[in-house]
Amino acid sequence: MKPYYEIDFSAVMCSFQIKINDVELISLSIEGQTRSDFPVNHLILESGKQTIEVKGLPMSGHTEMHDDSYIRYRVNVYDMSSGEYAFVKQFDEYFTKKPDKNIPFIGHTSTFNADVPYKLDAWQNGINLKDTKIDIKEKLIRKYKEVINLINGGNYDSFVTQYQKREGNNALAMYLNKNQAESRIGGVVSDIKNGYRAQNLPDDIYVEYSAYGKLAALKCTDMMSALRLENPEEEDELVLPITFYIPEGKDEFEII
Image (cartoon, rainbow, N blue to C red; front, side, top):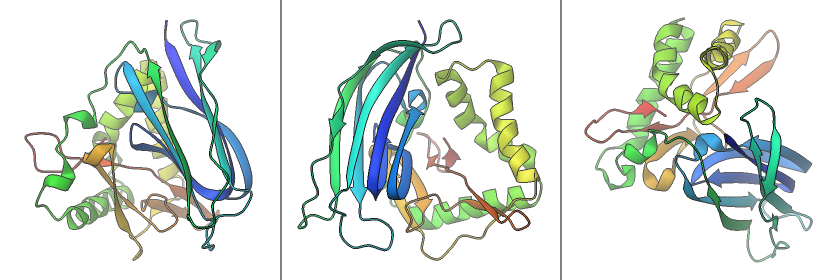
């Protein structure tokens, strides 16, 4: 069996974030409502208990939660052994409570047990960044600028090399074959080559820690990644989620 876990969620009138094992799955501000399904295998490092945390904040430009704000979610399980999505089961469905005017957020936390045939070599082997004396923000800014220069300088092979471990883990967790895995990373490079340029880091960036202090990323005040690519001809923007860790025994950030 090749278990494939998806989170089925809805969000209404809020800026929301969903985390699996304290690592972000998605952040988005919704003036209205949305419903979607997202795979989560890449955030399941190994079999056992997994934690889900959903949090909703006021919509962008607002200071209070809307009266109708809520987040609903559940985990569905499929079997990918045949190459098709064969439904297996669904876990309990949860809803956040009605917003309280005295509390500027809504949220819910739950757990589920996963049984997967792999173990990812990921952030669990990193140092706790909150315990170091390193200036994490300054070090991250240097690393982001390095990535921006690689992209804009056309050094795509070097960029792919840095991005490879993240994509390798994604391929393992999503049961992708070699061609499918290469197509994923090729798609990212294809977008970059197609008229997109990485933008300079904005002023409103801050460090967001995750994975219980072992991951760090630069975010903007809209809760999304600070690494952005723009195509002026298409008037389009790509936001590239990217997280870094420092493996035990090393002192430099690596993409994971």
